[in-house]
Length: 547
Image (cartoon, rainbow, N blue to C red; front, side):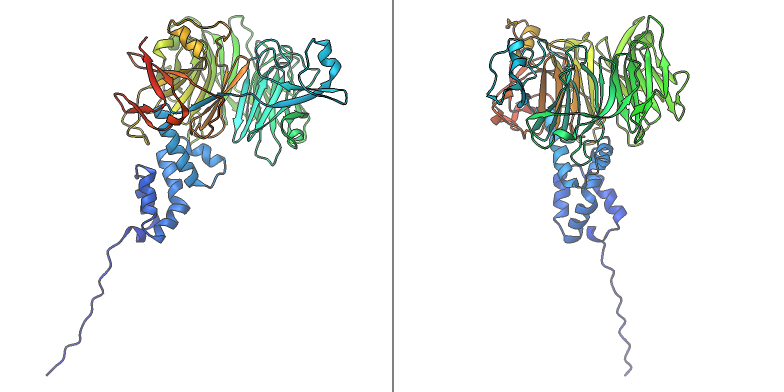
């Protein structure tokens, strides 16, 4: 009897998610629609949990928030699960118009000789100790060093906020405030007109580019005051930039290169170098025509600068090389083509973030009331236009992009703060399914301004103001600051900062039949509110009436 040997054939186990190569896992996670699904996947086994923590959350941010991802990457953050929670919450809150608002009132007390206050007719504002009277610095007109409301100039990075409040410079790091003032500076003459933070993350030092109406432009270090909060500091000048004594209208910073508007006709370029205390003008563009007035300058990328002006060509884009500005603009945008006017003006210009960093696409606020999207790659004068139908002809004073998802606008009338959603309908990379998806909405920074706009009577004591400046501290726009005349607003779109100082805002949406909405108690923040055609608003909003 013969025996045949038994042949055992090993069966190959079918592949599982845990055994897939990393490149396939990368492709799968890039198509996961929401964070809850990725969290469930990461809990399925040890291998996937490890992959999600090491790479998965970062892949999710890169695929679902591609236009915000470069800014997060540049900040050097490595806590990707934290950013996933923040960005998904922010997307939902912006869509549902969920936020809290507060007017900031810094608690800063400054000692000065008693005679200083007696000479100015000021009463007792604090205890007198050692011949000094402690005076509380205030943003409000008539309560600080100015008798009129100033136009705040803002910049923010991370947890650092810098405010040019008249002639004084304020810094908030975390929740602590300091003021940097010089008693020789006078209101009006020495007002801060340009402000950019340079490197607030370098230890405890805060550095800023500061320009003034008196013709001073320089880089200052503000580290001296960070020992104790709520007081006065002294700014140390690291570098002084040549201005020929003319007013600094605007200044912007990219790396070690500074572009500025000097006086009524000069666009100047400075190059900072370590150890150089005096920096001359490296290149300049002169606009001598009486029909041209430059107002603003903004870097679009490492090699491009856009100038906004009053002109028949309100936007001119110049190349920036090692030798300076190009002799002629690489592109101009005409008022006739963009605004249907012989002459117009552009003040704010902002580059839309791009992972390539080319600066080809940017937005500009026109005096005709529209924000236009311009693309240097397209022969068209603009590729998209965004207008508030209820405030269609109001000048635009400030712009703030949040990735390529939405941008914020500061209007010239009624203290209007506007939010435009620029994502394509049906093509949004990430959106909350129950949230409204209209083009945008606007909120009044004064209830009385809202009443006046809709025909109600209001007290004349609370004046309206343009929204002169906007800034955000983080890439996703969780905290946004708005500067109006003599005041500073803080908006929290995460709902983390709740206090008894919160303001109830009034809002309307950009739809054909506009309704007015008013915020209710903060306890309703985050709850599902009234249903609309596209989803639900935040639980705080209550319909007031149709105009």
